Image (tube, rainbow, N blue to C red):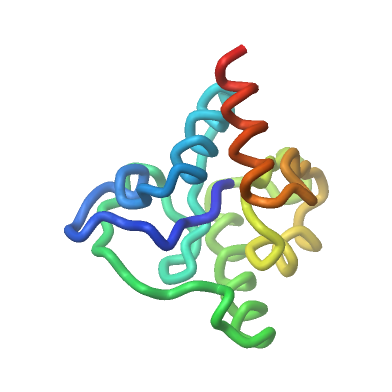
Length: 133
């Protein structure tokens, strides 16, 4: 699960192409290298997005939401996840910041956060290093 990014294309595009920040692109490349059963984007506007879902650009971020709004967002994402995954049996890898994970992880039995605690610059360095190995 990869969080969305503020840098976006200016026209409708597949979700995997909409977000154009270096961190999003590296996270997506890293996620693909893990060969998971599925990769989803955590969108502040849409909730859970499949990579090929076409969306319009938007300007919404969880950082500007209240705690209650983030809880509601996470509940909606949890309900979306239940349509595609088993929250008790599947293993999830989060490539997303704390604001995207905080209210989701309590609903998930098995998860990991490989970049937890790293500032964005260190995340970029780590991902570049891992992808170039």
